[in-house]
Length: 533
Image 1 (cartoon, rainbow, N blue to C red):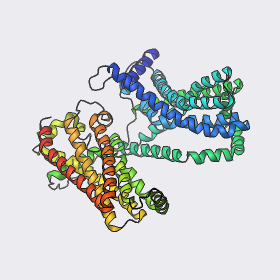
Image 2: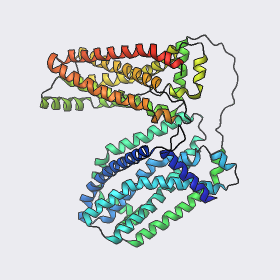
Image 3: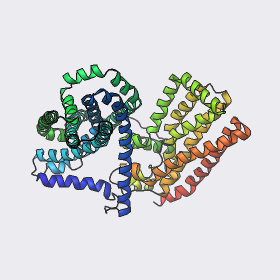
Image 4: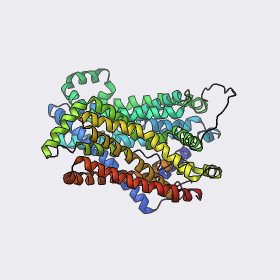
């Protein structure tokens, strides 16, 4: 039975990438080759990034004979990347799988279900760890030389590191499942956890150079700590540097931890999969409900749909948070930004082009706000409900457009205003810059809505399909980037000919004309097409 469960997990994993979710058929050879090439490109890009970090550390430690310390630190880094990259995925695979209840209803031991799922988690963790560990091996070999016995031992340790990461992610996933089982608003919890993860990742990424410098400066103290409290990691360093006894000790330690973790999770699996979230008993209270305008009711419907979907919020609304964070960071670092930009522009001979650069930066972030792009597709099987109501199709589309505008206006205005304040731009330049940024939001919203009306997808079983994989979202994002680049070029050319204020006015005019045209198309052709979908 365990073998059959593992084969099922592998088949589902293959279907995820090589089968069309909409039609259920296998993807064409060209599509499969494209997916494989894209994955190879992503892994190579990540490997080059981690290889660069390992090179900086190796150049300082290996000439001093600190090979074991180098591998211990890089082993810790590999484990951290593996845990960060797969902890939420582990929670989803072990405790949030759609067929959990179906499998539990069959005469299958929960232990076998758990082991099969942990095998899938192990495969993902192995990939994450390999992307980090293999560049480390290559970097070390380029400094210390490649030896066959050392190379075999360090590659075998990759399998053990992935097993240790599996232990840690399964334990953390268990904690997440335990916590979320007691939280009523799971959508909000998912958004908060994901934002904390993303924030922590970018914090570490931008602090990486300082972290490497601190490790090199305090290498003796850190090495002393690893020999004590970090004894298992030190054994990993010994094994990776060519000491078989260190590799054996680290392997035994990991296997024992895995056995203990599997036993604990197996004993608590049924309780965590079947626990019901505690909730207060609903009490009916009679109250008067006032009549609301059609536009208000439709807008509240769209807002509720957006707020109930963590996938929708994180993939189409992340730019909103980025704009707010950018506004706060710019106000805090205003003087440093002003001095740097002033020096840079003076050096290249464009001292008055700061408003245009400001506008371009805000537009690039604003182009990642894609709320309207999947909004029509998200109606899904319930599209007939909207179409059967005595509501003008134009009003339905305008509610989706208004949601985009309502959520984006304040973050865009805050980010563009913060940059104007930090750079101490004159009042007229500031007003025009903020106005151009706000008009761009309208342009993106109209374009995304039109794309989704033209190319809707209602045959989905998972909302991540229209949000992450459909063409309207991709086209809208590419349009935003292309429009930003085009407006920046037009503004630069106009600036050289007629000055900075007229140049921004030209950008305003182009945005206004394009937005009005798209709005008329959506209100006319778009509404008629929506009524016939």
